[in-house]
Length: 257
Image (tube, rainbow, N blue to C red):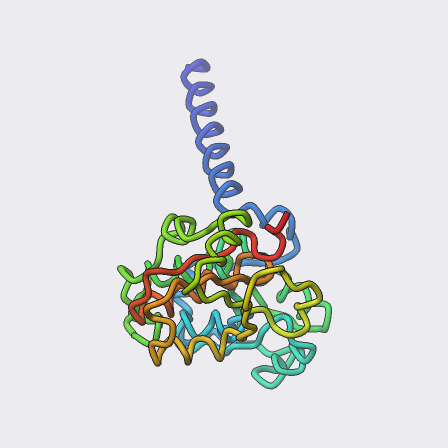
């Protein structure tokens, strides 16, 4: 009987260990931010109508995909806490959930820590992020202006990776006679300018409008950003507007060697 009890105990222990390990692997930043409370996808869905949902990403990311009813307050804004307080008093009873791009994105956690430091209570990180939400609740999400969000329009990471070029490949392709090279970094990021012939500086918000007008549609497009992350969102605009002959600089300016 004792052996049977011990076996059951060991089985339960191993199961709990495996579950906790899987959770840690799925959400690697939870351990880094142990004081940040989080909501799961199921919890946020159950409390969707009674929760203030805050998208803490950039306006560009929000425009591509967001949770319906979410308010966009970028964590990068100096007025973040003041803007948050316009939605709810610091000691308000209604829950606040912040979100960003998912399991390895720290912005949702940082937003909660900042808000807590500024006196907010009852605030959580929805750390599963926008793409998990779209897959689970497309009717409560928008992707490229469409709601319910079309899950089949989510661009796999492999498709983004296929468009990435090393610096040597990127600079060589930029030498082609009909190639158009575009730097989408904001002015404050352009302390260093890469040596690329006829490089154009077109911020992303302006470029998306040009893409809608089909400018550059018949030319190879070579696009770089700061660290290779902004282009992920630009790819949605390129694909939606029928562009196929485009490439990104892997790791952005950090990829130049």
